[in-house]
Image 1 (cartoon, helix red, strand yellow):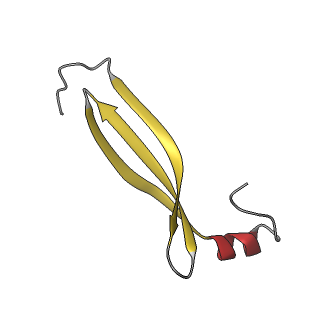
Image 2 (cartoon, one colour):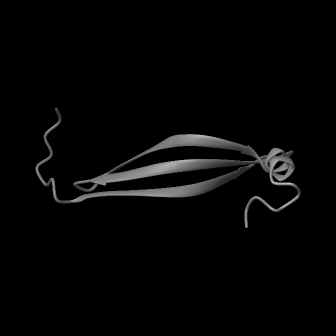
Length: 64
């Protein structure tokens, strides 16, 4: 068990991150955690590239 001196100051948030390369865009779900003024983040799930998601969503834009 990890003890934090300020247990009331814990904040978690989820965000969608788009990483762009020369050939594609990938979407990731990121969880950010702030505990007593320290920050950490982790990848919860890789959703895939925008092209692959567009095929799964029947042509709809995955970013909207």
